Amino acid sequence: MLYSANYPVQPALGNHEMTANGAAYLLRHSGVSAHSNTGTALYYSYDNGLVHYLVFNSETYISGGISDMLEFMRSDLSAVDRTKTPWVVSYSHKLFWMDSTDFSSISVILQQYNVDLLYAGHWHYYERYLPFYPVTGKADSSSVSADNHTYTNPQYVTMIVSGAPGDVERNDACPGDPSLSHIVPTCSPQYGYGIMTVFNSTHIYWEFAAKQTPIGGEARRPAFREQAAYTDYLWLIKE
Image 1 (cartoon, rainbow, N blue to C red):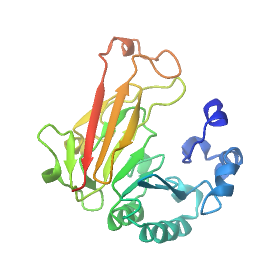
Image 2: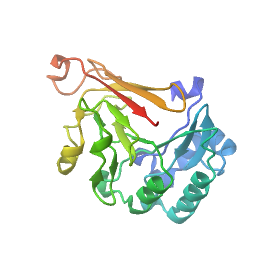
Image 3: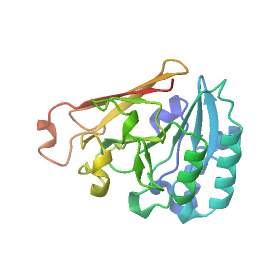
Image 4: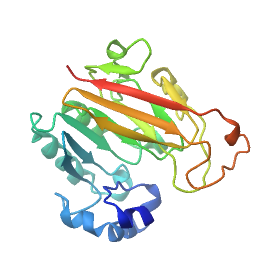
């Protein structure tokens, strides 16, 4: 909370904030609710430069309000002006397979309106997917370069898990869902952070850098500090 007290943040609710249906989360982020286009910090959207950001609540199947959120997502994405914001980036706390999270309706909307990137956390590692559509289980490998670091005109959403917690917790093993390992070109259990750079309407660059020690202090695994430094990058291109 020290960071968010000094810098603007656009949060997404997660499982740790689910006590009393997110009451503490909503109280802390009342300013986001007051200025969001939904009147709540549970789900909303905003523009920044060339990107339209859509924030949704991956806990909504537990907390309720799924129909209202889905209606907002459809209405919001259908109104995006791609001449002004050619990129659409979404984020939530979880991905579709984490803790039996139900994305059956959400994935359809993200695909229908051509969302480019989906970021998530929850599991404490870093993982990058091939362009993938969970509803059909298909990946668009034809858009992926030989070194797996460039996706050109992908048919499906590109998903990235960057789940380093801000305190000292376990680092999870890769991959989180072994059944999806064939569409995960890279994964690391190391803590770290990523930076997304939007160069123009056709090129986004994402880079992840692991830290040798967790953000919050020493790791619980003795071998953690002995791991080699890990980095990853991705060029997402729309021609």
